[in-house]
Length: 510
Image 1 (spheres, rainbow, N blue to C red):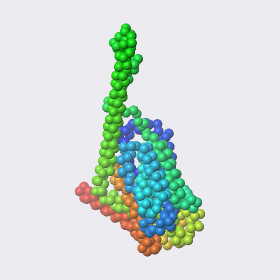
Image 2: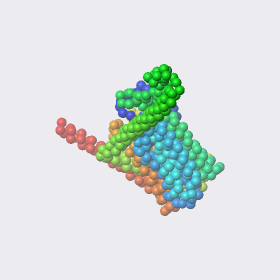
Image 3: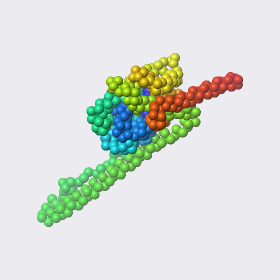
Image 4: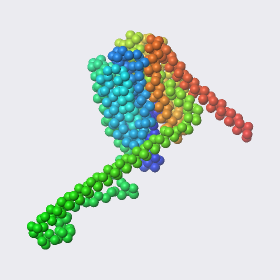
């Protein structure tokens, strides 16, 4: 089984009782479930793919606003980081409003962020419109896409998640080409405006996220529907009561006033009745909404803030430290490679086939191949995971020494393939904390990746502003990444020593 850091977001499954009712559902592992895969695939293209192509816009912003590289890089890093960091909080919306509404609103907010950014007068304006607004919308659309695939699949969940998240690689390739073309033809402002219109397709993807169990009509406790008394008509009044019979007997002109009075009283009674029924319905809707919000908040709070026991696991803490440094080493090349190519005068070759597209395409194969290798019975997942990490660190250290397009292409291919170890993160996390804590632990790891994506690119740009070279940016990021890997190795060695000591003590007692 393999998925990626884009694959599994956070586990917002229903209660065990609900799971039992969901299993016989005809759409589980088939039917509309494949529409969920298609919807999630396009969400990954529009959200994660667009973020991986932001290096194109980063070059345009540097030329337009003439700000430092460290300050300008905050725009892209804010969008990437907020998309992942807000994941646990978006879970509250999912628990209360559902995935369909959350994803649709996310598409609107994301599109609004792109459109407003087209009118940016300075970089600080982009912090709010693109970094925060578009990033928040991306998070609101991205997480429901991941959750719905997990809900619709049980036996084929790994296959479904793998197929849907290949949209990240395809999106990075397609969006890079699209943004380069739009910027060259229409300028970066019109390009962002057009991209905002394209992002509205996230609303279409959200509309496809049909809940598994269609909601039935609201019922009162005990399954009883509220009774609504039928409205009385003038005909019923005439024919039913004693007054009606009296009218038949004494049908003269003097009874016309009595009939008008009866009709006026009847209309007033009907108006009061309609008001009371409307008030009852409003109160009932408000009470049901309140109960739903309280239940959703309770599930969300117990799920994420009840996970403090995870931090007593030293191996998990070391893994969290690794996550804080790992993702930035994968993100930094996407943001700064377009400018590095310009500094090396390799723009013509890069325009023919962008280096970031090489990373994106090879990243797809890396996730699949490393996942298949790790599934082999004779192969340890941890060994594959650590070997891929060492390959990525080595590539980060070598990249600054490459000044030709061919050399950079080879290193970018290594970065793309070795970064496929993100597909092993859920498996490694499960080995550390167990299946019962996987959802909470993985959510915390994703937040750490978001912080890494938020701080990494501005840090690399800040180092360039000081040294006028990107070399030291990659060296320092590689060193920090190595610290995270060493923390994993040290904790692994400590665990091995403790296990051998326990076996020795148990053997001595026996």
